[in-house]
Image 1 (cartoon, rainbow, N blue to C red):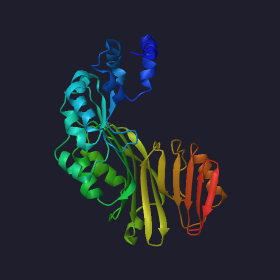
Image 2 (cartoon, helix red, strand yellow):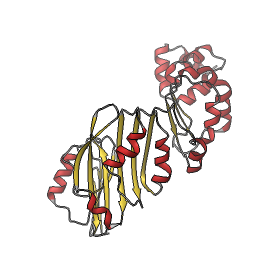
Image 3 (tube, rainbow, N blue to C red):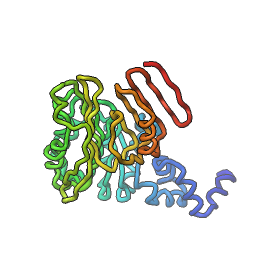
Image 4 (cartoon, rainbow, N blue to C red):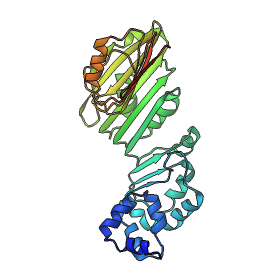
Length: 319
């Protein structure tokens, strides 16, 4: 063993833990559990290295390599299973990891690169043990009623739900009635519901049923009155977007609004996309600065001009 390594191992446990915390938990466990060094092996069993295990690469795209995964499933996970509270993985490694041990303290799963086929394969029955679910999709989706809503209907024991959805090609706007009758009604144990749902459609008949701006309250299943906002934005004489969201607004990304939005503070929003056919004036930008104090990126598109503002950089391009 080199002199530098000896000096490192001579450090107090408190210092070694600080150093190891700088590393990925997966790397710490893989490198130090069951090695021929009792000191490092003991430190690797600390709960801080096994409460959250991310089996997706640092770029959140590539899966863990097979050799490392095999060692985790056969050797490491059976020894630390009681400490695990959160898993982050892809469907390709899910069965191997979940079958490796009994995770009695597991409360959270985060799935990456999850396809429609994966959802149909794994989510075909009721989900009585699922207590928390979050789905954020910043791209527009077409199959809300066919794919997402049936999945939500099976989460009858859910206690906390977060949704960020942008829906297109639907024959009715998502409104207060839909939230109450198609989501909350199916989740009698739900006590926390945070959401942003926008509906895009070109049908003239939809427009007359939704006010341009409205702030209402919906009753969650614990009797609490939750505040929500409803906005409709007309992109043209035959196209509109209806946005409905819970207040306070806790997401960091907001799109699909025009120069009409509630007189409230969106303190967590850092990225804002605004589209409208009407010109934006000084008053509009004053309201933006007042309502979005944490804004980092502002993207504005109108019929004649497209603007982008990123921190102190500002540029414009004719659309």
